[in-house]
Length: 37
Image (tube, rainbow, N blue to C red; front, side, top):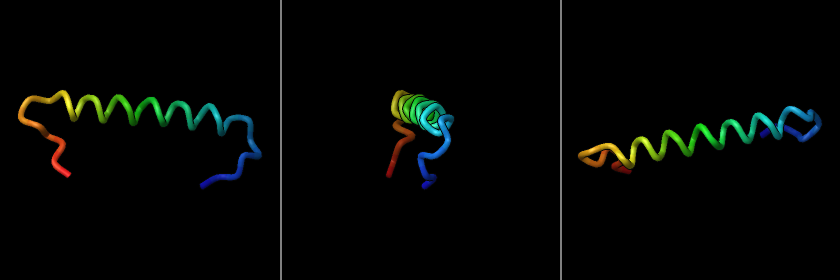
């Protein structure tokens, strides 16, 4: 991935992690079980 040279990288990583959690929760909570991996 990216080197930890920029101080914004930690903020970006936190935002990306939060968005991923929200997407995964939305997929899991959907009726019918959309998450079929």
